[in-house]
Image (cartoon, rainbow, N blue to C red; front, top):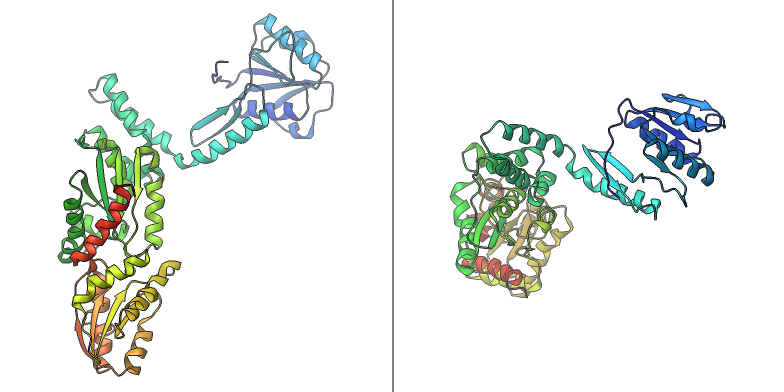
Length: 469
Ligand code: CO
């Protein structure tokens, strides 16, 4: 078998028979733009009525085949079908039969076809199981939907390349790179814009080949506050650099809002998909992703999903755990924070966590319980957007008659939430509200990422995947 596609626009095609398969074949031929004649002694079936075909109600005759480009023998009589096959072959017209032939084999087998998005998929089981072919072609087509529109983009890139002074070999290499697993994943996850930007980099040969095989991608939510960014996220990245000298360390952020904001200030940070596409194009084969997210929440789910789209672009692609996932993580975090914590009966320590509607919000009360067990009865954890709420914290502070409150961020970077919602001078910041209620308030603007012990915790999560244990 040698699969080809026929250009049928305006060509005379003939279908003999008017059963179910005949109707399907006729519809497919019409779809391809063919002029279709259907011949059958039976009345025109309902499915064909009103269609742009010539329906001739009569018995088949060899002379019907004259001047026709393609024949489909689709009667329910296998002997007649075989006769049609023999007649067509005699006239040199490609023919296919819907029933098995014994002496005269048709020279065409019609695969199961699905098309859309500019991509046509034909699946053939060589006649062994048309049903399986149909199911598989549907499944592949569903998968292909992720590349909707990609054909057109690539067509444009090809045209643009033709206008450049490149050899055909160079053009082919570029087209291969823009079609690679990593670039397709970038298109699927990021859409047109990042795809075209990366394609532009490939075309202008901005992507430099890496000397090493291993890369570590440190993935953070991100912060647009420059003063805390390098002290926290940058410090974690540096700790990772120090701990894994055999790998190159890169940065990605998960917050599109922060990436856009920084871009306006002239600072470019990759999304997870952009970073992974770039690392693959640079030639890295092993990539270890370490999120600096506090918990396995929505952002973590999303980054795992984005990374998994690139699983075939690398021989190794692993993602480490966020800060708080295991019981040991809670103890380790408390040990990291311990030197900073005051414990006298009049002072409360209140942490501000982000909070989420995601089920992982339970890490906040869980961490609070660990503090309690470790003897820190004066520690409370509240959140901006989850449970416990700030009101819950206020009630506890009042009930326990604390005089002083020290506010700490339970966030990696001391960004917007910390500087405004927690420590801002605006009337509804935690600091202002507590002060208005008569508490003596102290704020610590130290993101978790600043603590060397927290950096170490990320390094240890990374070594779990890096060293394969
Ligand atoms: Co927020």
